[in-house]
Amino acid sequence: VVGVDEISNSIGISIYPNPVNAELSFMTARGNGITTVKILDMTGRVISTSQVLLNPGNVSQLNTQNLASGLYRLSVENK
Image (cartoon, rainbow, N blue to C red):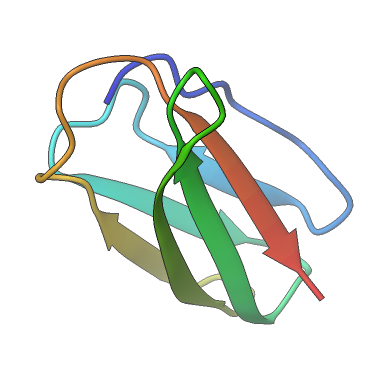
């Protein structure tokens, strides 16, 4: 996976590395709880949907080994 933009938002989430090879890591300074992460191709089609547990200071990983090389978009929702 390449081309994952670094973001900053209200829950202070960090997503790395960019580009990613096998695992995408998520860490938050403020938000917590179950977070829905969707990986979308460049046409907007949802490739995968996962739940990650975000707690301040902890790192959660999402396996990306099954994705073909290319550009993807992430949708991160914390309710």
